[in-house]
Length: 253
Image (cartoon, rainbow, N blue to C red):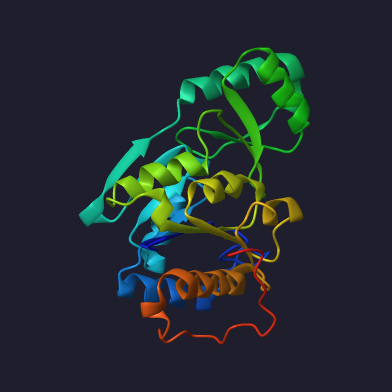
């Protein structure tokens, strides 16, 4: 594998449980960008929030938003937006869910959402998805770890990542993906190498090529170190802002 980019989730991967960014992780992102390794943010959050975060944190600006539903870059010099999902599927599914479950289906009004909707956790997700499948509707309710999202069933972070890296002239196999939740699994499967931070559920860790000893932002740093150690030894002497954890363990190469 030739490591040419890093893709990372944000909430609980670059942040703690209170959604505060790990400042060491931000320093590492800027260090990676300075060495020519672009960092792509991939999240369930909307394009405006995620793209703005990327600009201020110091990434290349490329993001996979709404869990793969839309890819974009809000940097003025690289501006571009490409929806991958069909929002009509989402609105058709919403109408059907409201007809079947009534007031249990409640939408969180977020104007910046483009191709998906955020739902309150007032509906059983498995029951809702079984209903959508039975009705032949190409939408699904997924759990981003922050909220339920009603999304096009044909998009995910893996598809979004593949589209995003193609704009850089890269292949998914040249990317290391880092995350913490179930909606990161497709990204893990698409990338050339993957890592789950220590706060990830066990079933997510089982899908990763490496399991970090550290949680949240410190886990992100550990994962980046491991990817560079394996695939970019020429960058091994980077001036890291923190020392590696003494008890870091790999769950496979």
